[in-house]
Image (cartoon, rainbow, N blue to C red; front, side, top):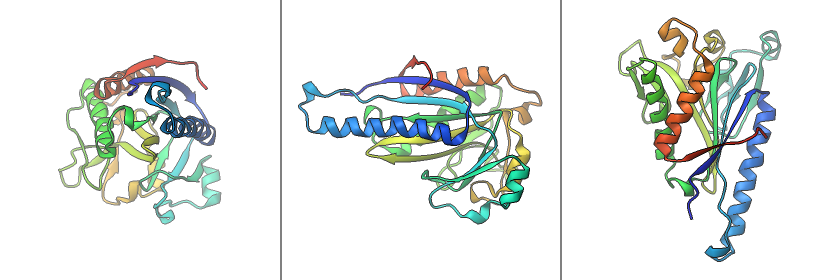
Length: 242
């Protein structure tokens, strides 16, 4: 029994740890429901929920479970000077930066409701981002492919490849958490303090930088939300924040 409904939560600017705890609450509840359903006849099972969280974070660096801490180029004192936090977390990928002006999306999905293919899940997120960028007149966005998950501009042009969307997820029992970060009006200077995604020869960019003007973040949210619903073919349900 597939549930194609997705509860949407816009949490605004929220501390990373607080949002992480909210994700884990939905994530754990979904896994618990799947385990309960496993022991019940299909007619008595309760559909699992899907949640899509949008937010921004104060300055924070996060490192994936197999990441290399040397890709953070700041010590503890320097982090404090930049008013930034650091977390070693359980998603895939290496190190990245989150901050104000960045559209962060955390899909807490039961993939059994969509596709039991984590690679297709990632490709659909990339597809939604590329559709969003196209709506802004950015036509050179492509998925990076194996080893370069995310969305890039001029990816195949030597010396010009730059990342605009990062993805890093964690799954258990086909339930996802963590997600993507689209640079909208992001302060790109903060990326100078890391080796982004452990790729030293490629840079990062934002919609603002590419277009030369500040972007309405609420407009970007609406476009990305619409495009995610289209590519995943889900019904979005607005829900009061957690």
